[in-house]
Length: 239
Image 1 (cartoon, rainbow, N blue to C red):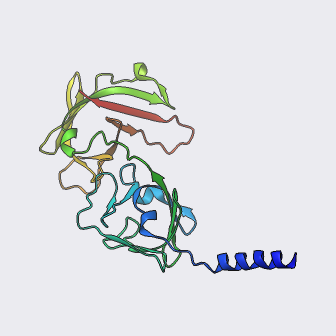
Image 2: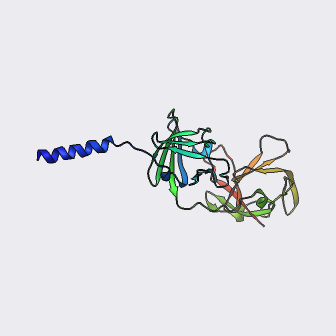
Image 3: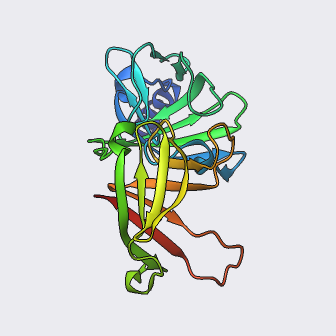
């Protein structure tokens, strides 16, 4: 009995003495950023959007931040003895390059040296398809598709049923209804192609309205400071 107990204790001791290490193979592949916590607070929307919420680590040592990013001149490496990931060209989280890693086959935790950030990654077998992968795909006429109130279709009650937006390839936009042009200004898509900003003047820093890009539509939500007001979203589709 004592001998069996000693064997069990010895095995436990040996297992506890084994040093945890992270081989590069555990990080290779596609990862979805599930959480970005800074000092315990969820901050993912401050750092990422729908198209940048992915990290792809290639076998040849390059990496990609987001679906539209290029792996060119971006290199990564693992230091297995230190359990450290080094993103040599920076990360989307305050450009921090070195991260402590705790990884399994389907889940990765990243923390910076100051323990300010805690990043959670979930493995993805396939990356989602991007409907609009080029700003030129936005050029053209967009017409009102639907209007939702608290998620329900209320298009038939909308005051401007024939409203349209024309995005020109020279950076100008025109919008109006069957009565003719109402506004002329400038438009610009962000680098991850998740948003279109509209400006009254070409050199303005702040847009007067922004539309989201999702599922081959442009949509915006009417802003309100009153929590009791209904959530109204207006969707446009390309003609």
